[in-house]
Image (cartoon, rainbow, N blue to C red; front, side):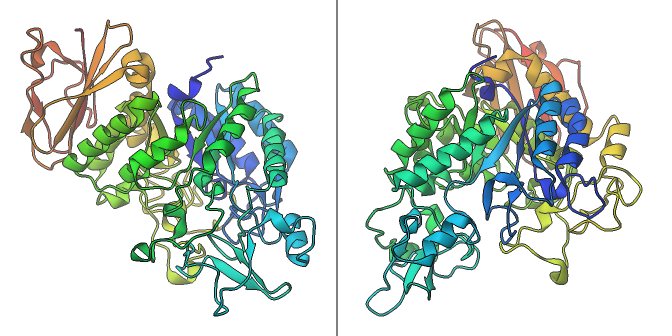
Length: 522
């Protein structure tokens, strides 16, 4: 088994509540996921990442965990999880699960003990402080989801506890070795059940200023999560990496380092001894603009190269509006974005439904349930043309995305020109070319509105050129005419976002919102 499999695979994110329901209660579950794993394998992805399915009161829909080593009955049982892992492995899919190290539910037994008394043995498992002299919170940190203080006064003991998210999500104290040991046991529990790695939720938050100093007042009301960049995290991450490296099946950890500075994010790779991968959020929040994307690509390479670290790329996830919605809804733009995602140097993460071209659901106010306003991107995945679109109940937990019949997996599979088949062909092209899997990357000189790059095979025998037209008008592109006499006519279009011109010599013209993948030899 390759020790660096995480550099050469496509990871497919599954949000369990919205993926596939096996019981008819309108909520996706583990048996539902297992039944649809063939869809993921047929796409060509090599791994799935499961958002939380653990026991939880669901204040934050699973990111408030009350038992890290149990499946919430909404989603099934541990036996169902074992079946999912076995089935996935049988299909050649690795399985990553969410690891939520920064906080628990306020209903976790650890917190129940911690808040019971200032003298409880588990008091220091969480972050408690006396009120400020005026009786208010101990510092000015701001919580996510609501923008209020990241502190709640607990009347039982008269102290505040820290919660960088909801008040129902108290922060663990990773400065306490007992907490570290307990969370290591959580990782071992799932590794021993065969998981291949973890997506670590806001993992940079586990290292905090021991003095709990105020955030810069000029940066308020930014939530503390995007400001917490502390050296205390790095030895903790090195310990996590040591734990993972002890397992022979080479599990990997990708961190949600929710910092918008790419250089800061890069520090959490360490020197090859901390995170295997880290999400890079600056591009995720970028508009569809050639100049901005070119700078993101340059900055990512510059930040990671000194550490020999491997990039990640993602356009959508369960926390942000789907990229097709953010980019204006155009299918042509979404198709070009798929080429960008799959052909940049790094590991692509795609969000379930991306391959169907889904846009966000319009969720009426009386059906909105998420404390962070993320309901639209979490709409259920439609599987069949006819209602209820492959879900056995009358109505899923959230409304359908627009045009669920046309956007369903069934309809998309039946249309050779669909978004689904574009993703399938893209992943096949990626998997067939070493230059796209692991090759170096060189940005090209291109006209305004176009971003182009060349991927070079590690053994020097092949290169692949990718051109992305971010604009709504055709444009002529000269592809390095002085490079060993090469010109556009020597390059074959092996894939285009709109299917036009494939298997013919590249003419030098990109259509409006068109992307192409070109093959040639140096």
